[in-house]
Image (cartoon, rainbow, N blue to C red; front, side, top):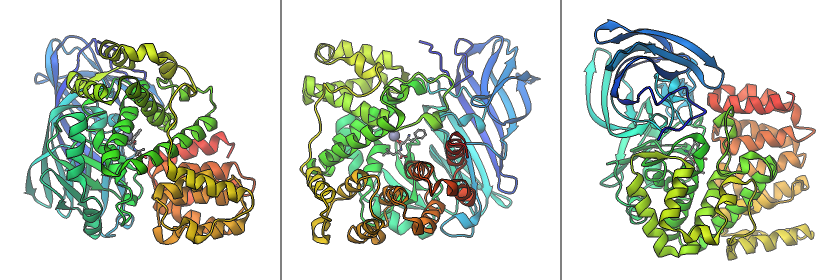
Length: 590
Ligand code: BES
Ligand code: ZN
């Protein structure tokens, strides 16, 4: 079934890419990748083939030993340039030689000072949602899957990694050439590479971690439980079909908590807390190996199929590994965040629908946590209706039926109707999927640990500050729930008091500080500004960075600082983050 993807120029009637062989040379001086690529198509193509590109400098195009005619014939700020390959005349392969732009959105080239070691540069990619096209011409839609092999040449002192299987390495002059293959077909957004001063540590038979030498010890301790997670995830979702599951610890500018690149999750260094307190993030990225990487959303309008399913799976696996109490606490906290974000964007906003009509929308700007939690709550409702046993059987069948395929929301609903028809009798599926807001006709999560926090907050609102003993021993999510639900403005003295009794400094948890700083800004705590600047210079996770800028824009005193702070931290943030913050500031007239 072909499906129009509003974020791609690809026309799947013309044909589909099946395999790409890439020879990649990383130029750390010029910040470009020099690439030669051989493409193989599923079937011979006669006539034209449209590919997505962004900033690609095309040097040569060859089909069957002859020059291939081409033209960049459409362009758009969001979609990039359409590469029109002309007159393929029944060929089923062609070759391109090209350079990436030094401004390629998917590629972050970091100088040595932005790494933990401080001696070697670092390169990493981030292709989701529509940035693969800035690395290589492709049908940059999650509905097309291809296999690939690649050689990556980097300076001798660096190690290259990919979200693929490493099959060899050889020396070549001052360089090393790493060889990879990806035998399972993947969508373009899961193409990923990295290079830096990296070492590897094994965690278990299928699991390991790559990090700079300075971080490897701490990382290996923090994520020692990964092997157990795979075993638990397989019980819920079926066999793990990707071979290894490794992590790559990135420098602080990485704009996400994690990115589920196949075989090699890319991870923020802020997940290394020294407490194993952020390992739910790994559960999330690992679950994507099934819900997202194996069974993939067909377009970014169906994003909830990736994230809602993954969040649901995350809660199921956490229930086993972290216990029911902690998982229930997370569920109530997530519900509160869902309310908060829905209120911010507006209950009637398109962004509150599970299936989001997104023609013309920039996925980087339009991404919220709504598809994560609303999607997960919808699936929980389905589970309640049919009972856990039947739902679990359904999950396994869903994975088996659609493995290595992409599907739309509608195809998923057809499958759901066929397998679990009573879901459609008992809950209003149409409302859940297509209507804005959040229906009241659902089971609400409950948590005793959350209620405890709520009681402390109620007392505080009556003028009774909590004591240190009261909050001692609180779960990480209790602290987060507390910080999230504090009144918007509180006395500056209380900001200081809470930082003290919650022991935020020594915990040094980026998530805590994101809420805390937003409260400080709302409360007019002006002396905190240098700390905020410092925080934004060493934390790139957008989930934490954006709320701080939003708070600045909404505050009379901090508003004027937003633009200068962005300029000061610009070099330490990812270009996706800079672009998204910049748009926020522009919308606010700054
Ligand atoms: N796949 C996402 C990250 C992503 C989303 C990248 C949209 C580009 C566009 C990843 O799995 C994710 O959801 N990360 C979250 C963590 C999660 C536990 C909520 C993040 O980075 O904050
Ligand atoms: Zn995710």
